[in-house]
Length: 150
Image 1 (cartoon, helix red, strand yellow):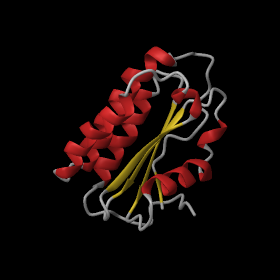
Image 2: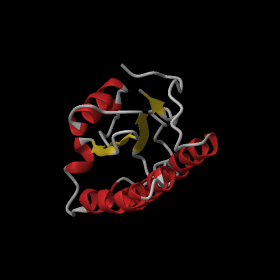
Image 3: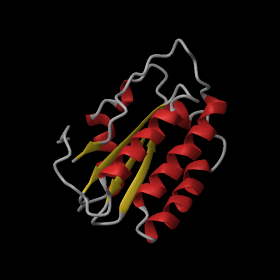
Image 4: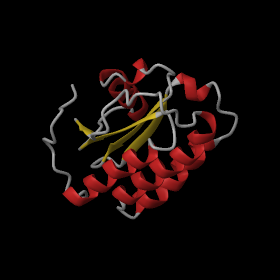
């Protein structure tokens, strides 16, 4: 189940960090018609890809018109994270962008720079997706830009 409000206050993310992550999402979506969401949980006891995929569906990311949403999932306590791009992105993806990006973000996370890692990942994703799904002024913001928590 997804909690719409911030129930868990991760010690490694301040309110300013969360504001900065949200601003990164807003900035990114100015450059692409893709939808970007961040979901943060304290822990993920099982398989991170399974959990992130469940969250992707729970928050409706599979319902965008172009199927071009991407989820940044982070479980702080377990130090697990996943990137879940929808199939509209994956079918146009000809590079190893997502694996490379995960490695870049991992460098930040190893130093407990979770906010910086997410902001870096969101920015690089916007740069990448602007070529595949450029911003379209007719495109509505289909998903909230708020960070979700579990």
